[in-house]
Image (tube, rainbow, N blue to C red; front, side, top):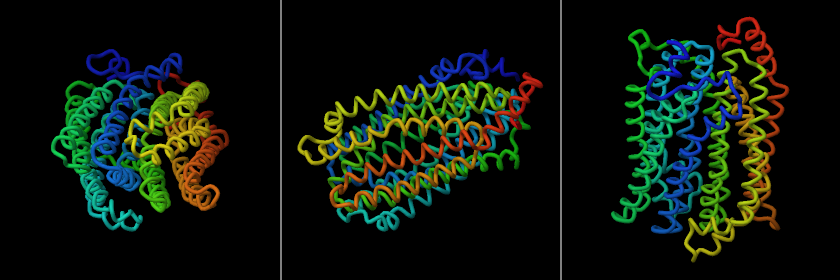
Length: 474
């Protein structure tokens, strides 16, 4: 089956990003993802709003205190899915759909097994780890309950991420959008029913999230199997290939370690946050939710750059890789510039969307924290551009490097700066911004002076020699 048949056949359409204007291709790829992220953030924010408005500030703090820890157990699944997506994008760019299908089979096997193991581990370790994190006693039971229920949903998230990563790898960002919208709507509806009607508190919020994830995973797998040509697997595709498994782990494990380092450092950081009491914890949780409004669009740009770079590396088109990162930086800087203005002008109003007006201290802390973080947004934008490009090129070591840089920054800066009496808890957010500077510098140096430049040169030679028959082994 050729790439052209996949592009013009029935059902969801793959997009070949090795030809055409990079900006137009990335924007068309990003738009469905951005719409999906709006829905995803809407239901994430709905969780916060429902808990903050209809349960209590303590419940809001309990939900927020589990974020880094839960992400730690999700990290390996997310990393392996991303690794599989990169492999798919490179094989697809080279026109090798046989190995695209084999990667799909192996990715599902790996992620199903990993999802079961990590979800079970998260549920069992919830209480002892939250206790080690010095979670305040008044919210510990709620935090444990929320985390245990959420970890049940790791398998559903892993399966959905597998389908989404594979489809994104071949340039199809529309199909994942459909099921993300479906999941978001279901989550919001069940949030309202479980919390407001049944009064299940944090258990209702967690249960709504898990149910929505499971339904979305089942629906997306079924739909992809029926409609997408790449998922029309043949008998010979159903085999465990050690090479594909090894490559998934080679790319995915460093990403998982990077995410795990972020989560582990987040756990350490959460202990510092917890030491300032429930008000600062509630503000921290709410600011983090609002901050995702910035991170998610940048994440879609990063993912589009990953697919764009992977396909063009596979096709041996070096100049397009360089052009892609230049266009990506322009788009990222334009976006974060606008967000800086919005955060400085409307930070108080944004906080009041999620926190009851009676919690004036939480609103004040959160509003000022948003303005502090906005000062560092340009560095945040650069992180996502370099990360997407280098991940798409298969630079596994880069994930480890940024993971180490982020872990060091998140552990060292916030705790040290907030310990200065004249700064206090504001150091939490100042330290976060300084961490962005450190990670952005790591990405800049790795892109300009790392192995990617040599790989681009090798791919250029492959493309010049035979632009129609290239492989991912540049």
